[in-house]
Length: 145
Image (cartoon, rainbow, N blue to C red):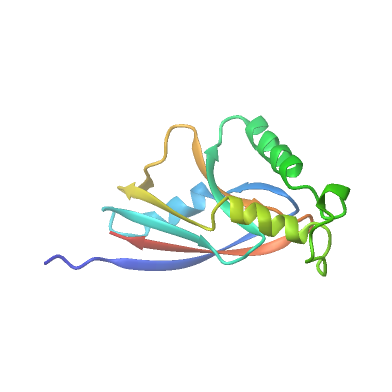
């Protein structure tokens, strides 16, 4: 039986407020350290107020529209429509950030081959920051193949 190689890496991403931060190149650089075979990259973000998405990376208006959509879908807790929110200790963007994270995902599995993610032509891997302030986010990359 063939032994399965498993490698783990932690990646830090600095954000400067709400938006999408692409890290496709960093993920592929990690894969290139492997044996060049095939497998699955699992990506996990270790926070509850940001998330991960695979999204178009060709037209920046897609990212702006996604950010605007989520802002309309889940406005800050200071908005009168959000009066039902109880968790307010960390500011008006905190509980909405948790909701946005719950609506998206904190873990993604992406197949790879030859040190490259098998993403579509216009797809990129993004951290989706849901908080207003700058943060340093930790992403765990796990390669199994």
